[in-house]
Every structure is written in C-alpha cells, then in structure tokens.
Image 1 (tube, rainbow, N blue to C red):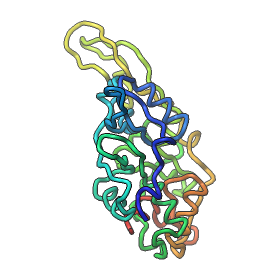
Image 2 (image 1 turned 60 degrees about the vertical axis):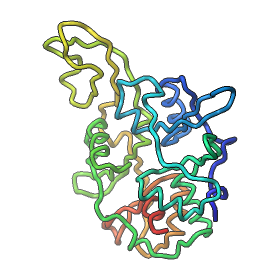
Image 3 (image 1 turned 30 degrees about the vertical axis):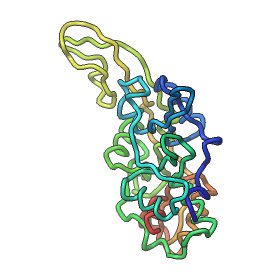
Length: 282
C-alpha cells in the first residue's frame, strides 16, 4: 500500500496562505477539529508548499501573529512511498502528519489517522494484541484542576491527553488538546514594561513582552477558561481490554473520532493505547 492510497489529496485539503495570521489558523483548527493546517504561498501564479502550523504552535507562541513566523518545517513524503515507510518516518521524527509533495508542490497530506484508517480496514497488519502495544505511563489530572493547569500538565507531559481522576483516583473522564483548543482564545491587551507586568499574578498566562522600561506595549495572551477540568472533559470514556487487536482498536478510534483509548484490566486502568502506538507497530 502506498501513501497515495491513504493520503488526503490536495483538492480536499484546507490550507492557509501567506500572508496570513494566527486567527486564520485558529478558525480552521476550531471549526474542523484539525491538529494542524498546511501553509502555502503563491509564487508567479503557482502554489508552493511552505510548511505547517499546528495547535501546539498557536499555544506555544501566543505573542506571534504572523503566519510565516508561526509555521515550521516538518518531514515530507512522496505519493509513491509505502505506507509502512511513511509510518516509520512519523515515529522517528515524532510527527503526526507528513505533507506529500512533488517538488515544491503540495499534492496531499498523510497523517497518523490515515494510517490508523488503513489498519482499521485491514490493509496493513493489525493482528497483534494491544496489551503489548499500550503505553503504561499515563498522564492524569484531577476533576477539580483548573483547565489552564490541566493544559500545562498536558504540555509538560508531551502527550495530547490527560485521564481525569476523581477523589478516589477512579477514572471519570478524559481531556484532550482538542477540548482545550475548542475553548481557547487569543486576547489583546497592554502591559507595563516597568516594575509590574499585566497578568503577572496569573501563572497560566503567556506574556508577549519583557520589562524594558516604564512604557506600555501591546501584549497577546492565550486565554483558557479557569473553570475545573470536569466541565470540559469527555465523561463517556471508551475503553478497551488488552485482548483486543490493533485492527479492532483502530476501528474504535475511528468510530469515536479519538486519538487514544484507555486500556483497562477489569475495572483497573492499566495503560493508554494511542494511535501512534498502533502506527509504531508497523
């Protein structure tokens, strides 16, 4: 199976163009639930691929508005490469998506989700039990944790989710990057560059300026609601047992439009099966 058989072709892609702003990207990511969007530029009447902007880039760089400075280069692939080779590149480069290019021309994009679709359809091997694929280290947070704190926990753990626990340490939900992004917004303001900085009492705001004198300069913060995580989590959590195969779990991920699923042993939380765990097995 080649990348061309699994990728989303250019005709079906949502892209943003240079020049553009972070608001263009945020609008697309929130509207479509994407994790990233390709960036293109028209040069002499031809569309040229330039890079990607992801949801992480928006949250990590709230003081940057220019699309050209927010985007980053990621590994690319070609339409005739095997899906297994593309999956290996994703795992090695820690990239959830590979733009498919022909020279400087964007012809499509292949993602971890596309590979999971191929596993779910049985087009690549998915017979292995997932108890041998699951990640045993689980990122967790508490139901009462303010959402900005939970977002920071997710970022520091470098995973796209947090399992939500109650006072008895029982799993009652799951919070994902998509949930956070859905309610995040960028707010404009101003901050003094003197002895005090706007929002300095809020450790969950990212400042767009540094003190350089007694002046006021514009600043941009990512604003995330401070209510408890329980208001934003998914409480109806899909789970799987270790006896399920990679193909079966891939089908669960696709059917429920999720990127990871908790692994349970009876009533006990035993791990998490991420989509990238299934891709890594290839």
